Length: 266
Image (cartoon, rainbow, N blue to C red; front, top):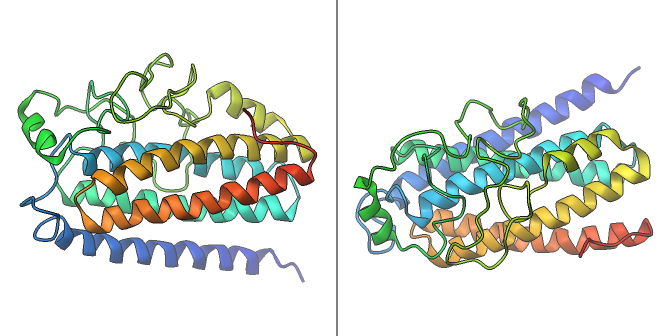
């Protein structure tokens, strides 16, 4: 008898559990964003680190989910497929939580004219003062909440609505610039995603591990900034959890690359 139905059932159960955990964490964030959010009263401001991290990391996670789904179709290697499955489920769950927080805070998921990661180096008070500066429109990153958490969409999630020449370099609070054609540090370009989709076997495994290593390094830098700057306790905890988990996965991926006669990119 085919095991496919059982496999789908297990995958569906995992996604359902992830959504339940996301809902519970979102409810917790409702309380945290008010009386427990440091010294601030009420929800975070439009340009606060809390809101900026939720918006930017949701976009960052979207691409990780997409890359993971791509590689699962391009290799039969169980180690890589298992890692990709774990990353896709974890980051889809976290992405749903962050988008849910923005909804609860009454804040848009995109802000026109706001460069990616510009919140790094911005205080909560700065974020509240910026609410009336005319940057409340939609049309920035492209994380509009309509893509869901499975990472499927038609544009590969690379530029999120920005020009491919957009880069967060030059903003205060972070030192790693995005490479040309990438929206944020660590993110892959459309060309790299196309290469991954066209590769197979070992070539796909190595490219995925290299791209995800870069992706994790950029994500860790952003999460570390939120762990320092965000005022919502549950969001700070999530950010620190991302740092710890992704550092562990970086070690794992370096080992997996070594076993395939490759190494992380410079």
